[in-house]
Image (cartoon, rainbow, N blue to C red):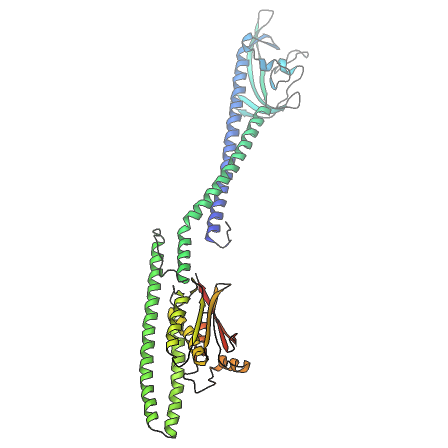
Length: 460
């Protein structure tokens, strides 16, 4: 699937993707922060539990010394450099040789906490361990009574310190963040895929409208057909109403054109008949002007009718039936000649336009060929590239020279007044073809006479 940057699909997918990814990133940071806080709080709770156990097991047997009962036996504090340590230091030792009491895991090292912060009666901080470990430190000052050898009692303040390595905590947080990252990548991919599917499915009715309009333009349908969602149904209804109104307007225009042609041709016929019945210079002048008026009326009425037909959507006409019917009719209209009209048109060839216009163009071409041909006429049609088709009509008549062909296309000039007709057939064909974006060319026919090649839009 290819998305254009100015399409609705791209805008919907890009907007939803950006907002969704933004929310996922924010959610990822929130989840990571919540997990980090939960792990750190759990770690701090463990340190608090260990400190409480250490304080409960401690007894002062001398002013500067503390012993622990067996109930604080924890293997984590017994393994050297395990990452879990405790330390007890007298705040004001009475002897310079007084040494802090430390866990076996510290071996012969000590812990110097830094960046301490007070939280109630305890202090939290960080320190470096024996092997460069980053330690979380919990410290509390406790006053313990001690019994002197002279049977007197005294008290001493001791700092109880418990520390644990943050390496396991950092490893847990790192594993969680990596899992979270891969989970969000997979979830983002699935979400983007779902967005693409949702947008494609959601915009499918608009594509159906576009396809229906294409069928109407190609002449395969006369209106939008099918069921549309509630949001699209009013649009489809308005388009169908517009198409129906256009067809009605064009129908009325064609009726007016036909009426105009009738009202114009009847007086012209009367004038021609009266002039023919009264010979003289005036009658000849009237006949010439009437003939000119007839030609102009036929010319411009044909153009007006063809231009109106272009406004009607859904025009589609099969070529073979129209040409075959015209060939039979026109052959009967010239019984004075032993005409043979060979029609070669494959089935399925369709003109994207009105039947009346195809009849007008092909009828003029075949009629001209019948007028000038001696005996043989060839009519051929077939598809071309770029959605077009050709219609060629050739005869074995006298033909036209190169200069005569150019004048015939430019002015619709008549070259033989003895042949009946207005001389505007080719000009009318040219004008109607141009209205459809087509073209007409004149050449010498393989039969020896004139060949007219017409190119028109092809329907499906």
